[in-house]
Each structure stands twice: as C-alpha cells, then as structure tokens.
Image (cartoon, rainbow, N blue to C red; front, top):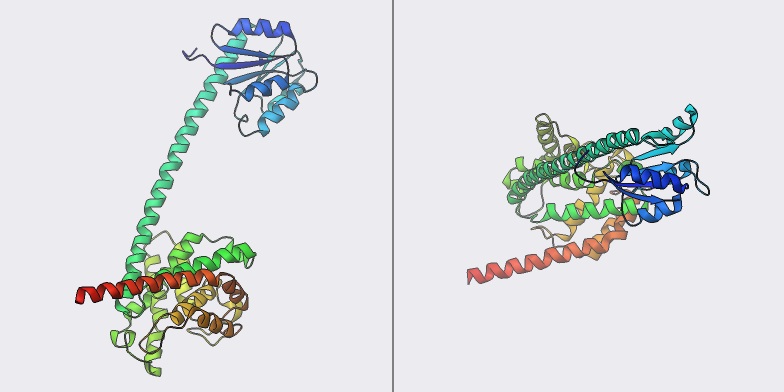
Length: 373
C-alpha cells in the first residue's frame, strides 16, 4: 500500500454491506459510505475521491445509470469505478466494463481480494495522473517552442518588410497598415459567413503575417523607379510590375530551404495575385473573378485603400471617405463585389488606422522640426 490514504466512496443501499465494507478498508483508506446514487453526487459536490465502489442493484438509480452520469460529467469522468455485485453472469460484467467500470468485485466481499483490487486500480490511476502531467508539460513545452519559432519567423518577416519600406521612401507604414486592414476584412468574412469554405482552413496569424511579403519583390526595383518624384512612364511601369514575379521567385527560394510552408504558401499567393483585378485587367496573369485566389482579392482592397489614403510625390492623400468612394466605384471591375460589401462593414476600423498613422506622422514631423531648430 502507499503511505497516502486514498479517499474511497462506497455506494450501496444495504447498510450491512456499507458497514462491512468500511471495516475492511478503513485501516488503509479514508472511506465514505453513502446509501444511494443521489447521496454519491452530493458527496462529489464537496470533494473528488480517488475511487468509487459502486453497487449495481440499487433503487431509484442503479449502478449502470450512475456510471453513465459519472462518465458524462467532465469533473467526474476520470474517477475509477469498481462495480460491486451479487450477479455472476458474464453479460452483466461486460455491460459494466463497456460503460467504463475498471473492475468488478462480487458480494459477499473478500477483504484480501477487495484490498488487492483497490491497490491495483489506485496504482493505475496514479500512473495515469503522472502520465497526464507529463503530457501536459510536454504540450506546454511544444507550445512555447512553437511561439518561439513563430516569433522568430515574424521577426524575419518584419525585417525583410522593413528593408523593402526603407528603400521605398514614400510608403512608410504601408506594411503595418495593410496587415491590419487584411485582418479586419478576414474577421468580418468569418462574422458574415462569407467565403466560409475558403477561410475555414486558414490560420489567421499565418495569413496576416505572410502579407508582410506582398511587395518583397520591390527590393530588386531600382531606386530611380521606386522613388521617382512623379508618375512613372509606361516603360518604367512595366519594370515596376516585375516586382510581382521577383517576389514570388524569392518566396519560392525560401520554400526550397524550409519544411514550414504554410505561411509561405499564403505569402506567395498574396505577392503573386494582389495586383490582379476582378474584371481580368490586372497583372501579371490577367486572372478574373474567383480565379483570383481569395488572399489576392482581399489584399487588393487593402493595398489600394492604403495607396489612396497615402501621400505620394505625384498625388495628394485622399481622405478615407474619398478612398471608400473609389473602392465602391471599383466594385465588379477592380474588386470582388462581395469583398467591397465586407470592406464597407469595417471601413470605420480602417479609418481608425488611418487616423493613428496621420497622428504619428504629425508627431514625427514635429520632432524632426524641433531637432532641426
């Protein structure tokens, strides 16, 4: 026996059996006797025992119905139950084991046999608890490691995205803002039950993080084009458009060196299709309608909106209201009509991000002015 005294609840409607059972067990265990299933559940409301000895043949609620209730309750399902019965038939024993009993003990009790059965089942229960703790600890360790890997992954993505933004001096904050827009759009899709089949298998963190790489190909575009203080010529625009293929190629090179492809798959889709248009007039492949992957259609809304509300050397920044009107005018031409509806549902949240960006930009300009003075 273990030194620790286990808590045992003995359930039987026969007072003689309760008295005899308690006398057999009390030297080694804390024994609590109850005459019915109802009293058992009252006890379980006060404490959880290490094991239950349960009579089968009881009035009002028999042992079979009692164990069904125990196993269906999350708090009680793991308590080992040994049936006590005067029945000798194999069918009754099989039914009890099928319902979740760990063992059977026949009445009248044999003290040595009853104690030995208890010892075996209590030892097994203790081992299960140790194994569960070990599994829980292992799961926690895996989750911590996953968070570390995800954190490293996001840090690398952030650095790459910042390198692109550092070269493209007119799009400061674009990556952060478009990530937030994309998150708002996807969350609203889920709330509205739109494109459920497409997004049901997505990991939102992966999709949003991967969006940071949507313009990674710009890192190979010359500064003369990337930072030109004016509208691009047709030839320059054709050069600019190559950033899509360059970005896809860069992501594929990363894919070839890692076993983790989920966020890279989303990144490649977004980088490769966010300039496609619903009517087929976009680039690089001229895809149309739902042939454009959903990630690309979502990013098109986020990307264009941010370009509209941002100041460029060749244009002023549009107000959020003006940007919303332009997005609406692009319904069915540039943008998926269903996503335009979703956009209008979250446009208020887009405006909050814009206001935050403009406040930070104002503070930054004021700081630079003070430093210059």
